[in-house]
Length: 156
Image (cartoon, rainbow, N blue to C red):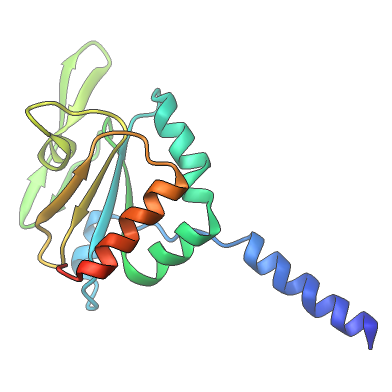
């Protein structure tokens, strides 16, 4: 009996440790029938603060659970070179120099006061309208506060 109980506890622990954040693309979100708010994480490969957020905030079990249950999550590299169709518009990568540039969709979503900072967290309501932009690192505790405020307001 103790072996069975141990095995069940071990399996439950493994499942909770291995909780994975479900990441979508812009195209997937537009084609899903269930409408949920969207959280877009704008980041760059070279950004150290983005790495911190990816390795702490988006690995936090409580954050993962809330995101998976109540939102669609999109992790978007602002230097992605692929064309993306979103809201009946095609967004493309815009080169700005030798091996540098930015994606038009990142600019459209993340610009605050004509500036784009990394990382930026953008929240879109169910109509895909921007309702919140946060141009800085959010640690798990702050991110959870944000999600709780959003849930309380239910204006999405």
